Image (cartoon, rainbow, N blue to C red; front, side, top):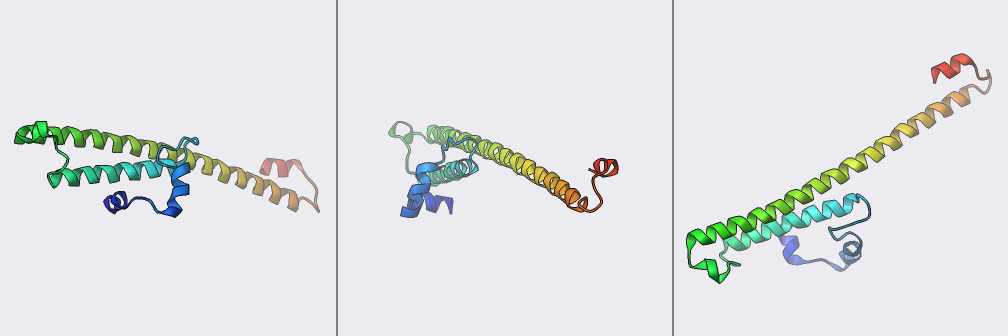
Length: 135
């Protein structure tokens, strides 16, 4: 699927998205940009691998020797795999940062709800030291 997307290109509805989040998104740990960048890196790797498997993309300088061709293809795919790994790490870091923000939001929401619940139940009886200790 990733290879098909790389070959197909982007549609008109994706153009606006690509302008803001084209895989190299710099808007502060944006998970959309990291995820898109990783997806693109995987698609590029798979496309290069398929091209090399079909015998395309080899430079003329190494095409004369089978061992030189294998070495060159191996180095090219290694470089591409390193890019995929780098994008994967960036995606993991963005996911972890987003998880931290969501966790903080949930914890603060729970604190606010607990405080609100205590406040609403204290309307008739008043606030006491025991109620403060309960919080």
